[in-house]
Structure formats: structure tokens, C-alpha cells
Image 1 (cartoon, one colour):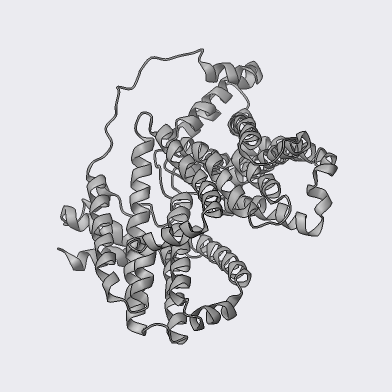
Image 2: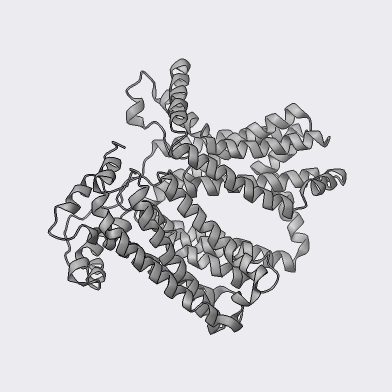
Length: 519
């Protein structure tokens, strides 16, 4: 194994990262650090802070507290790294590494070391080390044993996130894979609500389930962290097993199940949808609809948007006192309209490659291309909204109220048009070259990440803040208060589109430099 060369590659990776600290990577890291710190501070204060931790340790519940914290970090790391893409993308591709005198095992090790040493993973490591040091200070754990337990748990967490990423990437590339992924995610989304109902009827079952979770990585790490050496082999077995599965799946790329059709259809469903926008924009809209729907990540997140919204509605709504599910749904239904298309909507031309020049060679206004691309995102997002409303009516355990349905519809339309209005400006003024065929990784610019993550935070938090400060605004009795809001959002979108389309031609050279990697 060529350890010196691997270390030189890692040194090169961090030199490049340090060189970009004042640009995209550094600013995104600072933004996400602030975001996670704010969220953690809210959770910490909500759980009672240091006082609650001291009470837990003194009452002999330090292990239960460690299990809960490590379980939260474990699943949060898997979810956030796969959705946001940080710590998952290959910094050095296989083609690039073949230029160096490295064996296949060396190249694999270099790729994984570059991923696990991503600054985003350091945030989770810092949280885990904070738990270990806190338990040591409170006298519940040995310092070095706690540090070793955290490091092993961190490695296990990385392999688990990588395994999920590889499975998702291979599923979406197979015929019918998106449907299988939807079934799995729907099952996971329904599981908490079903489990809560079962536990409510059978309170003793919860303790039995918790006892049965002792071999899982978070529980085993909590056991070992507090000095139980019997959990060490379990952690090592998880690391070996997950690592072996990742390596096995990486060596077996998905095989296409059927030959791709080369037949050209000029009057397909997407062409008929595009024709609704008129003869001038229709061909462009159908082109961009294909551009969106042929992208693996767009298809994946369109599929994931509804179950993810359902999970967030249940998890956040159950924490609110009165009409909590409805208040939570006012935010999550807005997320469903833009989450699937968000990657392309805030970076319309960053994935077009050499085709970008052709948009200026056609006998039409170049601004029509920008308009059509935005209309395609609006069309896809709008198609999700009625499905979300029907699922709300069918699944939520509340009596049907048409006033709630109108308010949810208004919230979804508002989120759809406001997000795409902001996406126009990010597309023009903060684009970034991306890999259209990549299923994983985060290749958005700083503005794109701020726009996406900020919009999700606003969608989740704003209805809750509004319910606390002005409850009448989210009451079905005052449903008419939300009716003008979509009209305002549509007006903002129309003004943004009118102003942004002429700028597309002005910003042509800047966009071209970014897309070709010259800027």
C-alpha cells in the first residue's frame, strides 16, 4: 500500500479546499456550521440543557441519554449527507487516480479517506466528541474509552451513510428502481406514526423494543462509551460488515435491464404539455421537461418529496399542542413543490454543458430559454401539489375541512412560485458548473445551497412561529387571510421573470465562463 502517495493526495485535497475557503466551499461550510449550531442550540434548550443532562447522569440514566443522542446523530448524519450531498461526492474520480502509481485498493482507500475527512463530517464528529467529553466531566465515562467509542461509532456512521448512498445511486439507475425507492421511503415514513399508535396501546412494548435494539451501532456505542467492553466486538463487526457491503456494491455497478430506445417521438406527453405554453415557448418547455425528468437526482427527489413531507409533518406536528399536524403541513406542503426540481431550478444552465451555446443560435429570443426552463420547474412542482393534498385528506386523522384544503393549496402555490422566483436570480448571478449524470454529491453554489436550505428552514419554522405569535393566521376560521398570498407570490414571480429574461443575454459570457470551467 502506497501510504506516502495517499497522504500527498489528501494534502493536495486540503490545499485545494483551503484555497477555496473564501469562495464556495468555505462559505457553505460556515453557513452549514451556523445552521447546525442554531438547530442544536434549539434542541439543547428544548431538552433542558445541561441541567437535564446532569439529572440524567445522577439518576443513573446516562446510558439511555447517550443512546438517544447517538441515535439522533446517526440518522441525522445519514439523512443530511445523502440529501445535501456533502461528504458523499468523490473528490478524486477513478480516472484521475489512475494517473498515479496506485493499486485498486490504494485508489479505493484514497477516495474514502477524502470523503470521510470532508469538513461536513467533522461537524458530526465534534457533536459525538462533545457527548463523550460531557459524560467524562460528569464522571460517567472514562476519557480514553469514550474517545475510542466515539471514533469507532463515527467510522460506523460513515460506512452506513455511504452504503445508503450507494444503494440509492444504484436503485435510481435501474428500471423500476425509483418505484422500489418510493415503496421503501413510504414504509419508513409511515413507520413512526404506526409505531406510536402501537406503543400507545401497548406501553410495555416500547421497553421491549428498546431492549432489542442493543446490537445497533448507536446502542452498542453507548454501551462501550460507558465502559461496557462487551459492546466493542459488536461495533467492530458493524464496521467490518458495512465496509464490506460498500466495497462489494461499489465493485458491482448496476446493469441496464433493457436496451435504451433510440426511437424519436415528436408528439409525446411532454410535447403535449409543452404545447400548452403556446407555439413560441412550447418546444423549449418540452425540451426542459425532458432535461429535468431524465435527471436521476430530480426523479429521486420528486419521489422522496411526498414521504419526506409526510414524515416531517408527523414528527414536527406531534410536538405542537393544538392543530399541530395542520400547522406543520402548511410548511411541508410548500416543500413538496420545489424539493424535487430544486437542484436544477437554482442552477438552470450549470448542467447544460456544450448545449449552452446553442441557445443563442436559435432564431428566437434567448430569454425564452430561461422562461421555458422556469416554466418546466413550475409544471413539475405543480403536478406534485394535488397529490399532496389528496394524501393529506386521505391519511391525516382529522375530519375533512375544505377550509384547511384551501389554506394548504395556498401555501403550496406560494412556496412554488417564491422559490422559483428566487431560483431565477441564483441561476443568473451565482451559477456553478455541475455534473448532470451525478446522483449524489452537492454541486450547487453558495447561493444555491443558501436558497435551498434556507427555503426548507423557512417552510418548517415560519408556520410554527406564526401559530405562536398570531394564531388567527393559521386558523381555518380565517382561511380567507391566505387567499391573497398566492397572488402576491405569482406577481413576484412574474416581475422576476420579466426582469431576469433580458439579463440572460447580458450575463451570457459570465455564464459561459462558469459552465466551461473558466471561472
